[in-house]
Length: 236
Image (cartoon, rainbow, N blue to C red):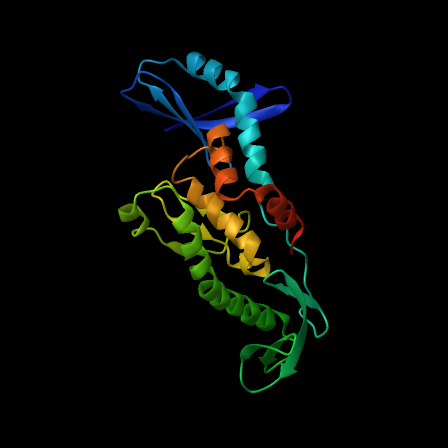
């Protein structure tokens, strides 16, 4: 694999090249910002760079699309009275000293029981663990609902599952192997926004790229996705 770059205006586009026995050049932009080029064996570096340059506007658009689909986080202090999100609503945090470490959702509060109220790291980890537990519990039915809408063969649908994975820059991801990865922090948003993210990633199993056909499919399956995306951008 070779690494190269081109300049498009003030933007530097870095990409890797793999050579294969093929007639045409293929460019793939991944959610993490990596750009991969699969090139015919006999293509020169100059020819490859020229073709990448011609597709530069499209590449930048794809990178912008992925950037917009990243979660925004608000710094937290993990003290009583602070607000935290769960399923799209804000709840007060109540930190309670206790010999037993647990998190309980009760009476409009997220209660964190901990030995040391001053240990913010312990409180943060306990809350993150609770969010993961809730994500596994709540995402399943929504995933099933989205899967039913997807225009894929039933046999293929039966093999599809999701995994919870903490991601710094993504709400969700669809891997090359077809695995759906979901950020546990997505549990902080509304059920409608969770459905949007899951459906968005599932649509990539039908159409891999963010092109016109992809957005037409997404609109057909979820007509209000643009509004949901706006709400997701403003959440947590």
